Image (cartoon, one colour):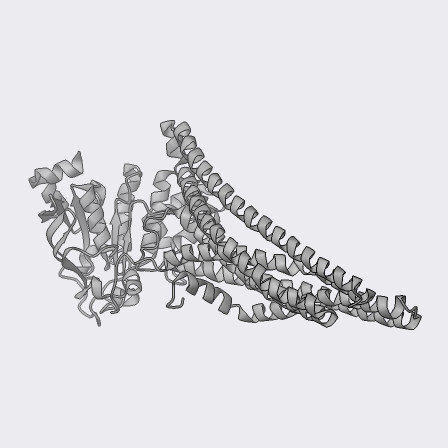
Length: 593
């Protein structure tokens, strides 16, 4: 992506990136328009040289010339339109990629204040409209050549007629541009309403099960009806503006052509031009409305493209949730983290007296919170040694959400800092941070596709997903799907139950194999027996890796090395799960009730 993310910059890149096809399409289109302008001239010559004065040989010769011109204009249009359409589609594709890259950028922010449906509308319809400007530009350049060619040929037949066209055509183009201004504003409003309607529809489809459970179908239908009607009204207003602009341009064009015909007729009556010249002039007068109408259409397309480009620019230029950060983590993940312990090593083997002492490099993944303050949190001091399996119980769900946002660096704390291996998160490059620390939120989404596609979405290339599947009890989920791991799970995992979706999301996080993994309530919809198996599985799969479980599940907390209780926004206690259950009433109430 270039540095200029303004609406003009979006249009400039969309056209410049396809300049080869635009130039080729314009040249071939110009050949087509020139051929169209030559046809009435050739017919006039045939009338003068082979009809008024009968001459069979001359008639045959000029008919061959006319056939060649027809072939030229036919192939010029065919291949010129192909080049223009290719430029439009490729430009739209690149714009879609730009929007998707911005939405998926590590520093985030593009989705703020925009529902998913609105972003989809920007990445599809708005990208299509801006890409289509390449086709409009190709046809517009060809139309200009057609108008100029017609004017020149008219000048050769009659100077007054040629001058009339040369003066009148630019005036018509200026009027077309002026009349397209209201259409630009109406088009922008239309796209905004359409995007909002798409967002509402996406929300309703995503929550259709909840709506049915609450018997809120009527309220949902009423909401969408109102939104759809607003979108329809905006579309109608834009269509009226387009119809008014097109109608006025056709009226002005018709008046202009009538004026040309009137002047030409008077010249014929005065004897200034002959019969062939009259035929040519009338033919050119009938030809000129075509390219002039194209120029009016180009003005309307430009107005739509500018409105859509402004919407795309808003997404591309959206400020990130966080800024700054260029450093890399001080210690790499992956194999280095396994130096001191393998995947089958018991947790106690890394901390007890029999712990290995031959590690060549330290295990990465130490997480430190220094006087962290943000939202309801204040003065949080916490050190998570590399490789620890830590549980965190937060009595206030809002504080838990704030903690997760800070750890994922979706926001920077108001006070204090968070460090990863001694480097503040604010100094780490967002992409480097995401490749080292993963925060798997409670409402993580699944994607349409196979079970295996979802499990390996963030996994290292060539990694075996089966250990993660076993740890999260996803092997049981695969057994219920036709095709096993190659079975499709539907959009957002719609073919799975709530507990199955949670297990798949957890397995995906485990398969990502990050040095630091933070998981939020991964088993709230899972039965007790499966939850106990998952608790053991997470411990085994994450041996030697820093793991933080933000949860109130006794089964998960019992499998941790240590539990930290955050109550009232501060660290209230920390100890093994059994000790806190025995000695701390607030913890006991949060976990066991």
